[in-house]
Image (cartoon, rainbow, N blue to C red; front, side, top):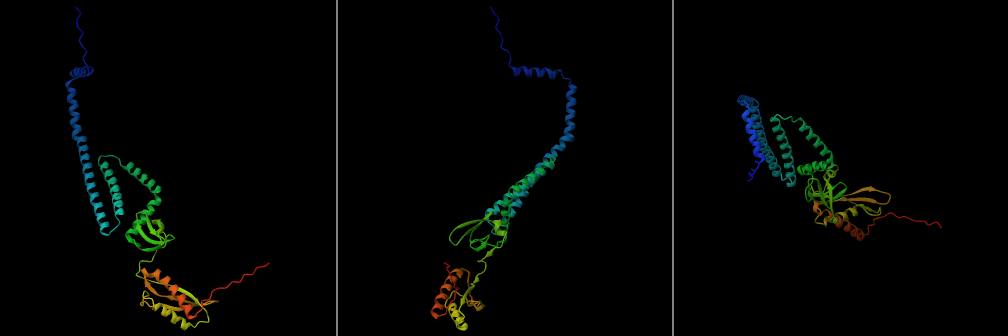
Length: 301
């Protein structure tokens, strides 16, 4: 009768058994020496590492607390000045990211890690991003200045960047204008702040500058009286400041009269159109001629 074969022990069991036999052969004094080295390290370098890690943790959490405190204070100041919410959010995120990066670098410095390379990398990355987004950053800076100093506001009728229209919206990077024919024009903020801005809505009143040529045969005093009557008949024309009616120049074809009445800014367009029509119909009815240039054309056969 054959003897049954026993199963071989698992490989892991063999490895553990060998390790135990190996440890039994080690001289006990070696363990004492290793323990002594460990104690010395814990009392010197280990304690320093523990202090550094604790300092790094404290720097990180205190820095994050200060970051939240500063960003919250800046956001509250901007909200109290009624600055656009999109700009508040963007500014808060930007300051939070910058201060968080500073706190992380400070915490790594407490661990004894050389942070000079990190600062150089961040500086190089910031320079690259700044060069890539030069136009956008310029528009952003212009938008911030416009929102803070408010040279224009929503609802103003302005002329800027070669375009005239009513301000519909002032965003961080661009401004939307609505033209008289109801078109929306989006203008980069840097284009607006980079040139002259004519704001027609800032003042409550505006002056209409109307100029017309009258024949030399007309009586100057009578013409002035007619113009005075025309202005007095329109209730939208202000009495204070008083309008100006005068002869501006004597040209080779006509006497050039100027009419300069003051009106409310909201009535400027309507009064200008009405005044042009009223002057023409009234002068025709009074028999006063408005001369125009005549040209003769000769055809040579």
